[in-house]
Amino acid sequence: MLGLGIESTCDESSIALVEDGKKLIYCNTYSQIKQHEVYRGVVPEIASRAHLEKLNHLLDETLSKTGIHLSQLDYVSVANQPGLMGSIMMGAQLARCISFVHTIPLVPVNHLEAHLSVIRLEEENSDVEFPILGVLLSGGNSAIFLQRDWGDVSKIADTLDDALGEAFDKAAAILNLGYPGGPCIEKEAEIFIINNPQHSRKDFILPRLLKSDSADKIQFSFSGLKTALLYAMREREQEVDQARLIGQLSYEFQKVSFELVTRNILKSVQATGIRSVVMGGGVLANSALRIELDKLSQDHKVRIMYPKSKFLCTDNAAMIACLGYYKFRKGQTFALDFPISPRGQFTLN
Image 1: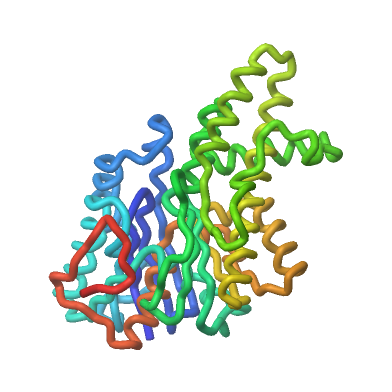
Image 2: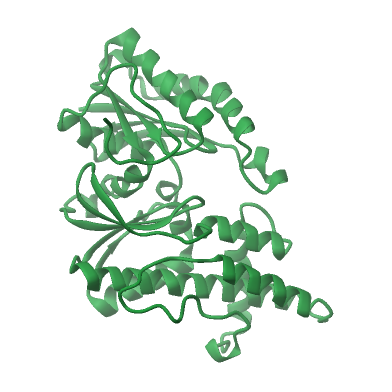
C-alpha cells in the first residue's frame, strides 16, 4: 500500500512516499531556518509563503526521482492540525488538489500523533503495541500522552510555559549563540564537559527544576530556568573567561532540562504502569538527551523508543504518511472540505 505524506505545519516543507506504513521510499524536505534565523523564531507569513513556493517543486522532484506517478497512490495524507494556520492551509490545498484530480482518498492526520508513529519506520520498533506513553519534545510541545490506539490519545502532562525547544532558542539568545538554539547549546555543552569532566551538581550555577513537586504531579516548566540563566549571565559579565562561562551555562541548562524530562517520564511510568515509551520531536536529536534516556531505560527496565535517525525526529512528511497508513486502514478518510486547525485535537468531527 503506497501513501503520500505532506507536512507544512510550521517551517519545514516536506513530501514523502511510504509503503505499508513501515518502509520509507523517499522523503524530500526543505527547511526554512535561513529565512527565520534573523528573527530568532518562525514568522508565520514568511513560513506560509515559503510553503507556497516550495511544495509543488518538492512533489515534482519526489515523483521524478522515484519514478512513481500520483495515480499509483492508495491514499494521500496531510497534517491538518496543529500548527500555523496559513502554513497548514498550503499543505491541505495541495492534498485536496491531488485527491480531486486523481480520485485518491484523503487522510488528514494530527501532526503530534504523527511524531509518535514515525518510529515504526525503523524495523526494530515495528512491533510496538498499545497502550504506550508518548512524549513530545519540540519547539512547540513539551507534553506526555497516553495513547491507547490510533486517534485515542489523551494528554497527561503539559508545560506550564515554554516548550523545551523554545526554551533552548531563548537560552541561546541570552548566551549570544545562534538559531536554532538546541544544536548551538549542545555543541557548547559538549566542549565544556570534555574540558571539565569533573564538573558535578555541587558546582552548578543553575537550579534544579520543580524540585518541590510531589510524586503525583507531572508537569514541565522552563521559564524559571531561562530567568536564572539570564541573571547568571548578568552577574558574571565581568568574568575574564566568558567562553568557559557560556560553555558551563550551556551544559547546566541542558543537564537541568533533561533531568526534568527523565524525572517526568519515570513518574508517568509509575503512575500508569505502562512501560513502553515512544518519544518524538526535534529535541530528540540531542545526543546528550539520548544518553540520558538510554540510561533511564536500562536502570528502570522501561522500553524507551525514539527515532534513531535524527532526521525523523524533526518535522517531516514521512511521519505523516506513516500515520496516514494506519488511519487509512481504519477507514478514516475524509471529503475535500476536511477541517484544518491551529490547535491539536486527536479526532476529527
